[in-house]
Length: 345
Length: 262
Ligand SMILES: Nc1ncnc2c1ncn2[C@@H]1O[C@H](COP(=O)(O)OP(=O)(O)OP(=O)(O)O)[C@@H](O)[C@H]1O
Ligand SMILES: [Mg+2]
Image (cartoon, rainbow over all chains, first blue to last red):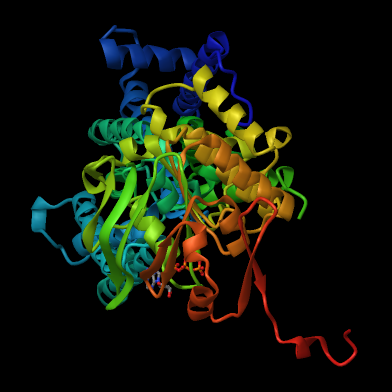
């Protein structure tokens, strides 16, 4: 970001925008064709045409189902989830001025696990409450407790982080208590799988929920890009630059919380993406949020779609939990980025 | 009449830190704020730019209570340089100075030629133009201070509040920053520790002690041997510089030089 041309270079910008849109589309195309059932790309496109516009191509019902109902919705959701988590991480790192901040720092994933476990094992809410619904309620409850704790402690960044740690520990303890005392071995395995993230059950209705949440969240964050830049030297410096600090904080904490809670409640806790993608994006385009946020969205989406493909093909006949793959693939990738961007001490 | 405080109080945890201060910065003049460590200078400056809200009393900008002015509007007129502010983010010098344009840009506006011009002019004024692309964390303390001042200048303020701007600066840059502020012709309130610099550059001086205003007026009326001894607890002799300004000579116990000293 060190050199802005004063005249925007439109051809270059349009080129970048097209590439930024084409890359996730390409990743989705990969995700739709790769899997245990090999399906040619042409068939995949025909199935898409059938599903979207009812074009009536001759595609077998099984292939049609696998492509359209299973792989496409799954790939789209993976993209939305990766994008939203990376975006939330970037926002929280800026607001809390802490490079270790990530979407789950405010207790959202811990609360979601407790909520999910309460439904899965305790049968909380009866038939009315799905695991996702329970997870969403749990994350909201955790967030409220953490917000109260943080406000009571004065609201400074380090206090918010400490409140998040305390809240997370509390809810993790509750989850562990329920699982160890009441769960059967089978249930414990299910919980474990959920905790590490799972795109297995994703269907179109989930995509219809996640899409508006992620896109609206992105739009709101982009409107605050300049305000986020102003937080570089702290809240007082931002305020003296004309940023309505309290309003911006409340709005952005709420937006990241809703994005994160939505994603966690659909697919469970997927680590690493929200912490590391923002740093990778900063190495690419610098710290200015007007560029950083869209780049986080795109890289997060691509990363998660590719990680999901790997989770399906890495071990034959088995699906690895997605959270395991993001860490397995992401950690070495990040090490390389860190190494290449190292600065002399 | 530009920026003024009337009967301003502010305290936290049961302690009054700014204790009924009334002062006014005359338009285009420099008001120096002096006082011992912990006397409440920084706290008062934070009240003057509404980073904290007064417990009672009122701060006015052109006769308007600044509590009623939006942050953004305030930031277009009034710039503040904190005593110390740093960042862990990898920013370069121009990124930091660009932040000064924040209050002038709407949420979706792209970077304009006027913005670029303000940034370049501000960097030139503090003598940091060649450092345009240097990383913030590689700057020396004094260079950081000058970049902060450039950031404030990029806000194109008509009121400028500086909290110990000469901190970390070598003598040449201390003089050049204060000369620069004088030449800007903006209304300026500046907290200073160096009494001689205050005497040299300020049109008026306000002296704080334990949150209270103990003296204010021209350097000649405020900087007296008696007041300095009472507030700072040091003995001084007041003389005059060649330009007729006050000069403060600190008197130390001659024994401290030891037997061998002449
Ligand atoms: N938020 C706060 N909570 C508690 N005490 C505070 C707070 N802010 C300031 N103080 C206290 O108020 C007093 C005045 O602080 P202030 O920073 O205004 O002093 P100062 O005159 O700027 O000192 P210095 O010359 O060292 O910069 C100090 O004793 C400080 O400890
Ligand atoms: Mg101070």
